[in-house]
Length: 422
Image 1 (cartoon, rainbow, N blue to C red):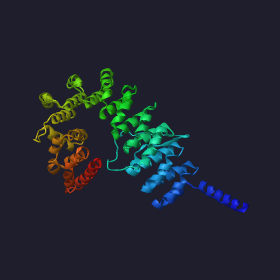
Image 2 (image 1 turned 30 degrees about the vertical axis):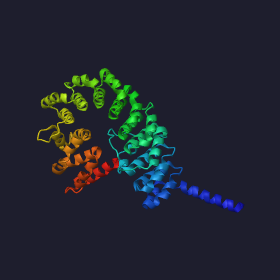
Image 3 (image 1 turned 90 degrees about the vertical axis):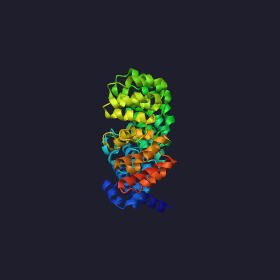
Image 4 (image 1 turned 120 degrees about the vertical axis):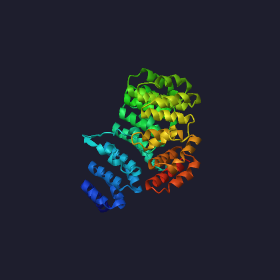
């Protein structure tokens, strides 16, 4: 019995020594076996050498199959912040290939026992609605957002939740916005925006008065996008008090997203403002009031306006008030034509997504799927993916057979996203 026990201890000791002797280059060599190497790579996640564990996460991420998810979830439970960040980015990378090259982990460096990195300024990545994310992935990211090993870990997890549309992690994000860290609050707010969870907006309203402009602007945008009408008085107060141009613009834009006749005087005040973005926001406010009596005034403003962003907002307003014919110089034609513009495509697209929620406007867009330019067809396909109904399905099915490969691919993608909404 003693001999057997001694033998077992010797084997265990030898295995421990062997594990400790593993170097990152050995991990890379083993990973060349691809998916079959994952069980062995997962064992390396227990290695006492941090560099070995980090390399194991890198290689598991690069293999990127379904079998990669379980070990990456396991790696989120590592006590080291770098491991948590790299595991987070690895999980996102599975659903959004290439993410690890641009995510927070790509800029990561060690600072003693801590980490240092830089979040990219652009935070608009999000997976398509038809992509289904495993619930345990969102659960793991939610735990990190709530209680990760550092503030950077928590902020990175919050960004990941937004990209993956992790609705189940909303409670974790709402906990995160109660922190004192600007990046964590900001990333959590943007994630809530991407998930489009309107009830959550009520819990973010207190940040509209935050003293940090970055947080304040994100909070203002959030309550507007998610239709938190309770925040309207605070938005008006912020508009009237601030001297920060970004806060002013965000405030008026969100006020315009919460249509109320009581805001009419605010829209009138800023429709003639010297700031282009303020004029555009005021026009959006009139659009959402949808009062036909405003149409003559908006038509004249459109004729007199020389700035493209404001003209687009005024065109949107006229379309919302019923001007939906497709003549050469009509407002709706102007919005569709602007889908060809590299500079203003996104603005026109956003207006069309909102306008197309109306049956008549959506129907008016269908002919352009046959006669439009490549960019117009692709843009309208994406609009229908977000705002279409069941009548849009055959239109997108037909587009999926377009002679232009890119247009056809976008038609198929839009169809999948539309069907995922039903």
